[in-house]
Length: 329
Image 1 (cartoon, rainbow, N blue to C red):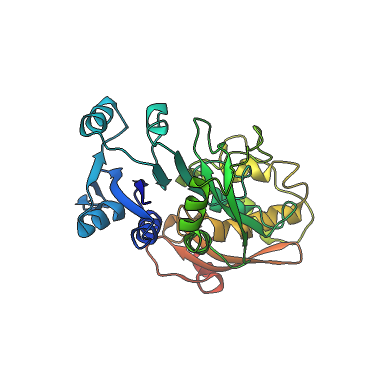
Image 2 (cartoon, rainbow, N blue to C red):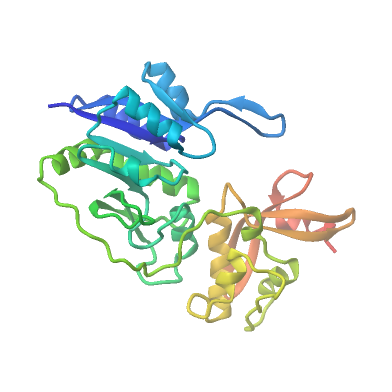
């Protein structure tokens, strides 16, 4: 028997899962669901997302969405009577309504690259990397195949594949390794679940971690005076500034996560990797040509001090911090 499956998503990771299932004789991809082409970048070039492009190349029907899933889509699907066994959601970015969750005849599925119930939300890899050496099981994560429900990443778990985090990973390596891992077993896991060989296990309602929410530029900002304080010798923690209510400052001021200066330094070293390539750890430095944004590309711990290794000042090429610090007041 061939299982009819639809994929919802937009990124290269979605395409990776689509290619795995397209090569598997047990599955038939009926269509894909992804965002409509939109303008992006400084030049506002309109381009198709990777899943949409792949669907066109493979001659697989693709349904395109605008800002949200609405009744028009429901009417279109109902009208065309697209019967499917599974809906697989990977990097979709839309709230999936109940009618869409109820639509597959077997189950709606989701791949979530974290050790659920930890790091529910849209940025699990970034948060897992941020918390290295700041919690128990510091280098352990997972990639999870789950049945979707209306809760935020709260659905029953079909399988979790252990993922060992390397200390030099950025978010790019984290997600690459997570999806490469699940791709080796995806077809078997879905097929075994469909046949009843695997029973999905309910998750706890409460997560032991904060929500790994979608990040923005402000979340990765650290004031230059605070960076300087952690780059200097001393044992004092930096204090959360009243006018900075962002992810980094929320974590730096959290007594459970950062009870001491060393943990604050560790958090920033982690941030220089976890937030690469976006939104990047950054600050504003006073230079000979006025205030400039500076990205922290690489850093390390020496004793209890933060050492900046590689940075990039706005308008300049990346360089070692020692090479550019003469430009900074």
